Image 1 (cartoon, helix red, strand yellow):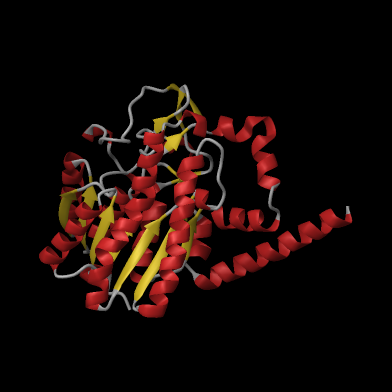
Image 2 (cartoon, rainbow, N blue to C red):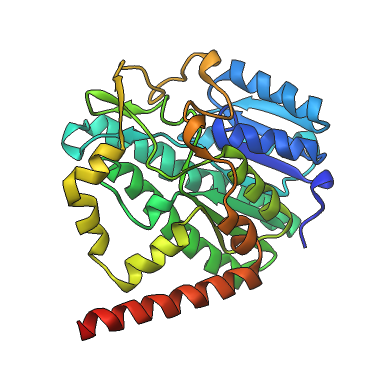
Length: 336
């Protein structure tokens, strides 16, 4: 069983902004010791102080998750400082919005290196310590786009699908060889974080999140829960239902997305692209925060997450009802 949060040592990558920043502060408020990992030292210093102000202990380490040696050093420093690692949260990521045709080979390499290899390197860094101490938990932050790729996010979605595949295989391997080590995955819908302001755009305008958009605290709450109560996966927003629909009626969403260019329009803001992004270097420190600029349309609470995803009995009941409804819909279509 995982330790109580006030006894845990938790490493979070991508801790300078968005989900990682919010989760770190929330965990600090529960008394956890949090190791903060990101490239922007100034932003990390802000989060480090916020964690301490909330009541936790913090250690900030500037590192690029795409550098395997750097992440190994993070793990070693965390153990040297605190004696162990209880939970490792793979959260860092880059976002590119635009057609594949607009992406350079260098940009493709970079998004794969950070979004996919960064999570693999995180596991490789922490796993020897988990095995040696006989316990530990991984929380891999993926995306609902790991289930259903949308146009203009093709490479981002591809990396998240790969994270999902890696997570599934890793989980079974560890259940066989080291059942005391857990592997959880979080698959959020769009979250109101600075991810979109920091994104690289392959369009003439800045990208915007695909509705519905949820509050950053919903994912932070899920991380907090999984650190103490590991689950196989947790969806934020309606993504589990979307995944079930895609499985039952493949191809339907393709047609929906093409209607009137629906999905293309949903990802384009009204602001012209400014050419600023965090693909190869951090953005200015003042642009880092827990929340993004889409607060006016953000849904503060995901009831499906709180009532079903974080409660296994609630999840089983919801999926049973959805399955019955989907079967009935398919039968009606066949009759028609």
